[in-house]
Length: 139
Image (cartoon, rainbow, N blue to C red; front, side, top):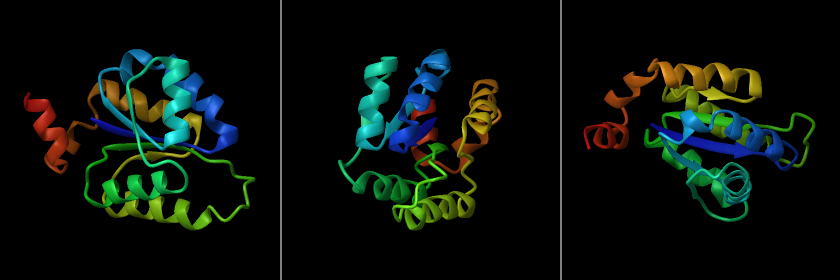
């Protein structure tokens, strides 16, 4: 399963703690993240994470992968008090998740529900719509 991680700066510690807590589940999946989140989480949790473009480009790269149905699950820990103009990118990413039926969690409570669903196999149906997941599952 392809799982994307995004965390705003004030939520990176929370994302790292989440990934440490669910290490045994996450280690069995392919993870990608924006550069800052990926480095922070990889250093803290010891997970192998594909880091995307540094700067603002990582979110757009994840959005593109979502649009091509290459992401199966999104964990997006957002800072709701942030008013630095991220609303456009956030809205685009979440809109794309809605368009392509990609489960997304924007807080730790929903992320825990979603990661438990991944562990139980509740999201295995993504293999029918994500060519990368289907190929990886066959190998």
